[in-house]
Image 1 (cartoon, rainbow, N blue to C red):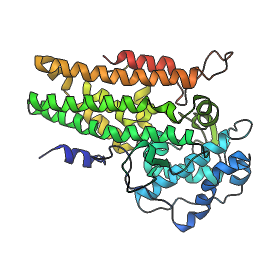
Image 2: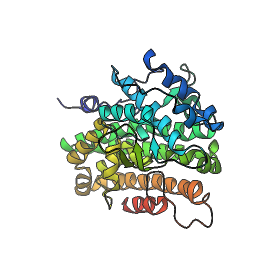
Image 3: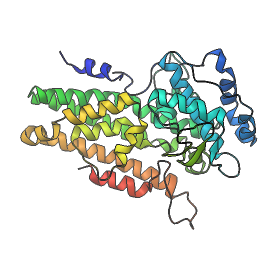
Image 4: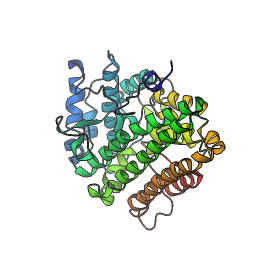
Length: 364
């Protein structure tokens, strides 16, 4: 019998942790000791403006890993080393050395991801508990790999990880709502949607805490540049398509919010969100397609008067989450950019205010 647990396990999703990885390892095998040492020293080398010089001395290692957890750690390490190489120093460069480019393309191809920093690397595969005996909370989380030692960077990524963890209940609620509709059980549908609404409210509250430990100025000037898009970057040592362009790390690459849209039948203009699915772990992108194909929640609620209220409340709560995201973008990006700079792109390559306003306005 197809039930929620079966569906989640089919797509590699944890009922407790959602899309967060739970098979994260601390270190790669000994053959990659130099990578581990380099990335451990990354904040210091960046601060001393010696990262590129150090990276140029690294040997070209072949990607030869066993468990998927090793491949994911390699993707995480190479993502940070690659973006640090392009965006460190006084000005960006338009190439990656073979020591980073060659293994990165191999690892990314194996995982079905592009060789660029993504939400899955920076958040889903980059968290750990400070105290394994203490509860899962934003205060008890820290990144495994970082560009600098600031709490601002840690809080930005780990508050996002906390939202992903809270969203796990929403993932279950979405699947439960879809299954309830298939069974024509309006009571179960009502309960599932109520759980989804609670989840969205909690996620919005957590998102509103961003400023507690992440300063807008430091985010814009110190962290954000490293998450930028790759535009015509030469992956040296790669024969096939050596010059490539990719979107940078973006919240639009989170499967979680697109899942809520798919469940509630919310459609967005343009193709950008569809493009972002290429930056998600393939299992998660496949899960989205499955939900989009299966969900009849919007039509079912429209035909059952008793479900009108809870459906509308879910949409309203999702819209409020997007409103909160919009406020953060206004303060952390638009409020920090030079006054003479008329246009600005987000790390994902869009105009953040226009894009986020469109997403919010479509949420109805």
